[in-house]
Amino acid sequence: MAVSFWRGEAFAMQTLPSALWMALWGLARLWAGAQAGCSEVGRCCPGRDPTCFGRGWRLDRVYGTCYCDQACRLTGDCCFDYSRACPARPCIVGEWSSWSSCVDQCKPATRVRRRYVHQEPQNGGESCPHLEEKAGCLEYTTSHGQDCGHSYVPAFITTSAYNKERKRQVVSPQWSADTEDAGYCMEFKTESLTHYCAMENRPLTRWMQYLREGYTVCVDCQPPAMNTVNLRCSGDGLDSDGNQTLHWQAIGNPRCQGTWKKVRRVDHCSCPAVHSFIFI
Image (tube, rainbow, N blue to C red; front, side, top):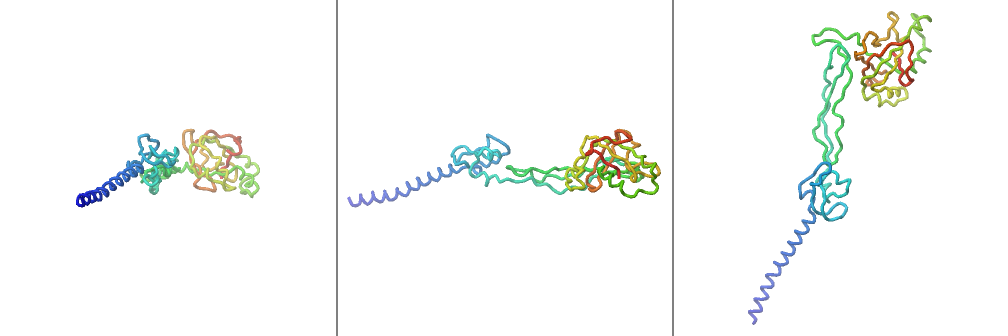
C-alpha cells in the first residue's frame, strides 16, 4: 500500500506541472492572438484598403477586425499597434537643380528648375511640395554667340498711383508743357507670372497681388519714363505683333515678373485702378 501510494503521489506530482504548463501555453497563445495587429500581419497600406486588416484590439477598445490602412485614423478602427508598426513618414525631396537655359534665344522665354522625390509620403505623412519652378528669362546671344534680343528689353512697371507723385517732382527740362501730353497707353494680356507677386503684402508693394494670369492690364507711358527722342517707353512692345510674348518686371520686387502679349495702343488708359500700371 505504501509503495502504491507513493507511486500515485509521484505520478500526480509529475503530471501536475505538465498540465499547468499546457494551460499557461494555451493562455499565452490566446493572448498573442488577441494582441495580433499590423506587426503580426506585416502590412501598412495607403488610402482605404479593406483587405489590409488584422484581428485584435482596436484603438477604440473593441476586439475584432482591425485595419492597417491610412484611412483607419479617420474611421477609428486601426489596430492597436498601427502608430508603432506604420509610422507616418513625410515626403522628402532633394535640392533644387540649377536653372535651365532659356527655352528660346533672342526673345522672352522661360527657364525651369526641378527637384526630385527621395521618399514618397507614407501612412499619412506630409505630402510632397511642388517639384518644378518656372521663371521668365531673355538671352541676348544666340547659340553661335551673336547679339540679339535687345528689342525685347523687359518692361519695368509699378502702380499707377506712383504717377501722381511723379508729376509733383521736377520733370526734365527737355520736356515742355506741350510734350507732356505726348503719352499713350498700352494694353496687354498677362500670360504668366511668378508666385512671388501674390506673396507681396508690404504697403508699397501690395499692388502686385492684383497681377493675374489672363487679365487685360493697362500700362501708361508718360514722362519722364518716356524717351525724349523717340517718345517711347522702354519695353512697351509697340513694334511687336499680338503673338509675341513680352517680358515685364515689377519695381520693388525683382522676383515678381512674368510675360504678356500686346493687345493694342490707345491714347488713354481705361482699365480698373487695380489693373492700371505705369512704365518706369
